[in-house]
Image 1 (tube, rainbow, N blue to C red):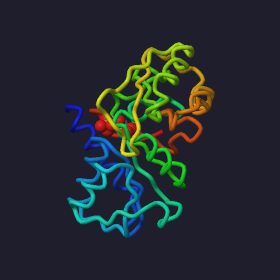
Image 2 (cartoon, rainbow, N blue to C red; image 1 turned 90 degrees about the vertical axis):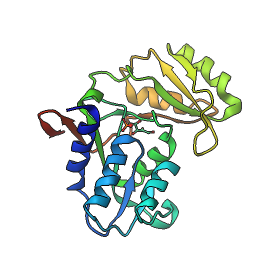
Image 3 (cartoon, rainbow, N blue to C red; image 1 turned 135 degrees about the vertical axis):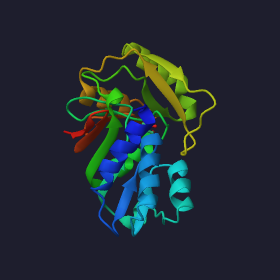
Length: 217
Ligand code: 5RP
């Protein structure tokens, strides 16, 4: 089974948690794209979706799903999203697709956050995947210098602009032994919009797709 097949397998398992006619929070990325395809293929009726990116919105609307603003939906029962890394405590690195800020907002507004990954994303200590940090463009160098002081190697994702009009620094070589502390520290830097560490608000459930099936923790 290749990685795309594992993504579809774990997405199919997540489908079982979706209630008909609810307003569903929908994340971003290829694993979530598999979920959206399966929602459509299985004709799952939804009242509407709250989307974490323009790309997700376009895919949902292409299948005829209504996408509403979080301001009008209010708090959500369920948010489903992928991740770039997850640790045994369900803490995550997200933002490989650059949608981390909207993803974090929807996660904060949701009673339940189910994260769907294939088993290549599991790590004991977060940080092998470069940590995305969304910054206000004029603060890029200023924030990068502070990230170097933390021991990281920030690399500007040149040419990429987030849906919010900002830039991304991908921070390499961090060994994140205190994810909550690091999340607070980086979020506290002036000019940082969001760091892609989901530790304070971790996932409530992680579904992991592997060749032997789907496990959950
Ligand atoms: C986007 C994300 C994605 O969830 C993450 O990058 C995983 O993507 P994929 O499912 O394509 O592996 O955080 O900002």
